[in-house]
Image: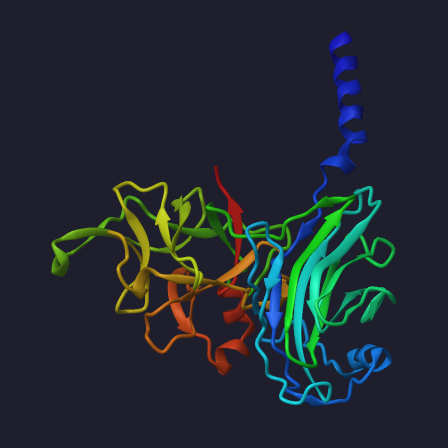
Length: 369
């Protein structure tokens, strides 16, 4: 009886502490250069610079032109020079947009939720979207306006909705020479929360199977059958394995190590950690199928860019897509699964209009130790 009583007390303590263990998820920051182009608009004074935000046309969350934003090592957005497209100072506007997704569990004790930027030039404003603000909202006073304006922080605790995905959008504009935004960060209860970033070691979960998504997570992963080794007679009889979608009970789930090939360009290689033979890397074959092939990839066949998920409903919370970097040479080819086979497909307009393609080319990453 004493043992049962002790366990009940322990359980009560754990449950009472659950808000402290609940995690606020922040997706990777994305950047969009805008669809409106250069806008003719005069900004001779502060009143006009505030009114300039009304000229912005925030791209839809699902707009295909969103790309992963450049960040510092701590995950903060950092653009010291966004480019100078404005030709007529104080007479034109050039907008750039940044977005992220935020999920706040219902049991989190949220005292503050702040978004801040260290510097912006010429103007920046923070917007939020959720079920209470379907058309977007912003807090007056959240703007940074002026040449190299320094630091602004806004608390969105009362504007965000727990238990659902909230969208945060920063609208930045250039109206003269310098064009920059730096040090965008999010803090929860005064503690900085880093955006989701692909970890060094991870495995990849299929977003959906045959177009059917399981909200709680299906049991299908990027993997291979270690008992089905093949050999390439035309390349020194090298052994390799075909990549496919697997269930852990039937085959081996791939566990990858992310290898930086060109950090400045964001190009990576994917080395298999749980390999039956040394130095296997995920690579694209001549038939556009994915294999685990030995040897450090020396070409684009085994080089990839980490992209925002092709299926925009994924929301950016630990979801990615992988684009090949150099093979095929004309670009725009994404790693996907089809009929449980891993392959690359070109993401043309027809593909991106196909929900099954978008889901099959989107992956949920899970860190591994």
